[in-house]
Image (tube, rainbow, N blue to C red; front, side, top):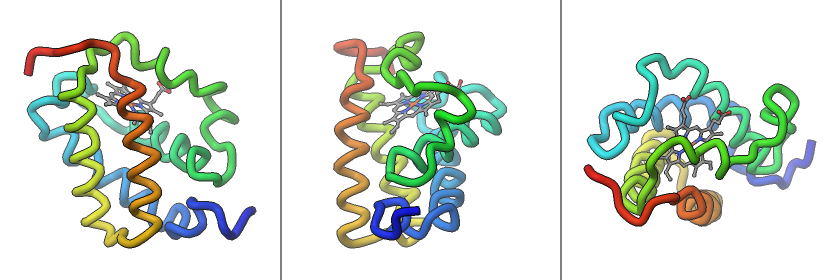
Length: 128
Ligand code: HEM
């Protein structure tokens, strides 16, 4: 594996696993997000760990198991406005604090995630 990928630079699964765990802890309790997610987040977390692994240049873990991500299409069943995108990103910032991600790698990751979050927006506005 590429030792200079963002995935490697963040610390691989040793960072990504607790990051995703912390992230969904915040998502589950965020008033702009909680209604969108299932009670049991086991599979959601597994998918997100595998997706972010490949998104950040690690092994193609998501595609191997679930096929092409088609991320925007997979989000179309949910009403996602800029409110939800900002909430998603706020949860990710808190999770990054929890796992002590900082510096350039954090900035790079947040930039990529911010672009993707905005790409998931499929409604101009949504009730809170
Ligand atoms: C799945 C919401 C942004 C990656 C989901 C699901 C919801 C959701 C409700 C389905 C959960 C489930 O039933 O298991 C949102 C909202 C976002 C957002 C409100 C705000 C913009 C993102 C971003 C990424 C992402 C930025 C990646 C960088 C994924 C992945 C899945 C998923 C990989 C699993 C897809 C599948 O295989 O079914 N998201 N999401 N999401 N989301 Fe998001």
